[in-house]
Amino acid sequence: MMSPVMQDDSPVIGLTEQERELVRAQRVRLHGALTNGEFPSVVLRPRKDGEVDIIYASSKRVRRSRNVFDILVQAVGLTSSDASRIAYRNLRLYQRSGYCVDSWAAPCNGRAWGYNEAKPDGTGDIPGPVANPGALAGTRYRYAGLDERCWSIRPAAYLRALRKHPEAEILHKADLDQLITPSILGRGRDFARFIARNADAIREVDAGPAAVISAFLHGLTIEAAVARIRARTVMRGVPLPDGLAAEAAMLYCVRARIETWEYKRHAQHCADLGLGASAWTPSPKRFRKFAEEVEEMLAKENARKEERKMRRLSSDFKKRMAAFAALVRAPRGIRVVVPTSLEDLASEGAAMHNCIGNGIYFTKCAKGKSLIAFLREASTRDTPWCDVEFSLDNDRWTVAQCYAKYNASAPEEAMKAAHKLCAALNKAAKRKGA
Image (cartoon, rainbow, N blue to C red; front, side, top):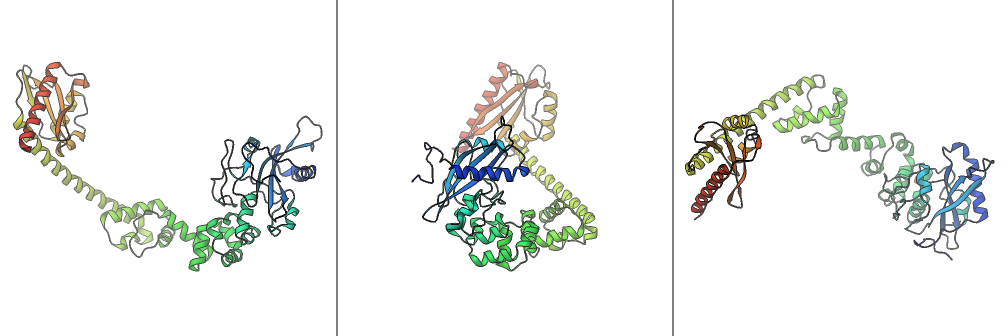
């Protein structure tokens, strides 16, 4: 007997003539519902052990025929109800037809159940109606409920789930195929019955597995569980104070008639300022005015922080540059100018048409990672000539860059002067370390 799982070098199992006629008949019956010339069908073949072989068939109209129902039927895949692998051939036929064969899509209709082997030309179980549901009568799946109406269910995945968890039948017959997942089925028949009792509510709000589980565990209605999950998803990352749940924050947004992004922005401002819990939920009628006041408070606080930071950096910058100036011994014919403020860097950057005054070098010098020197020709005194950056790397100073105006290459005399200054820095650092 042929194994229900095909190997890569094995041919696709053929359909009997009777099975071909079943597929043709199904194609004829469903012709009006089709949007293209190709159609996937599932043929079930019962085995003596109570399991089922599942054959995927493609039905396609022969274009050259005058008879609109003259159909070519071809088997394209094979698996079984007790196999974890699905082998395919000719799957390009299904890719062209527009039917999803991606097993990594959202876990619904049983597609997250079991393992689907990826193939070079497609992956996953194929959804499609069953051409011969009566074949399940003598098997363990006789109450599975598979029929021609199962347009989106993946038969192999569903039967594998049903084989291990009979309660999957309850979910399928309640038209809740999106809940046939391992996280749902592992909770027993009581949980499945709970779902069946609330099937209408689940379908109405399109509840997912997380919401249904939450409703079951916490004794909530389906609507309340969905609202809780949605609120926690929307408010994820929002620094809400103790005592204010995500659901209450969402309800406040409704009462205040504001968008969630407005509230999240306001909540972040309140957290940054360290305001009390009442600031998160002011009177709904004056939310926007209060939010503007909080934003102004935050802007002033940030300005004060930035001012304190600049004062600290300026102090550090002056100390480090003063220590550097004390080491400078200008080479003959060259004058060395050491900046003492951010304004000096900005003026030099404007004159030299480079980026030395954009603030980055100021911060690096204040933190002790770099030093800056302006080189002038002795004959021109204050005319900008070249700028040098010294960088500290592994406790050793190096010439990071030395450029003339417009970032042009520096003259040889300027490069020699820069390296002499760098040597003096390393000599001083070595004496300090000793």
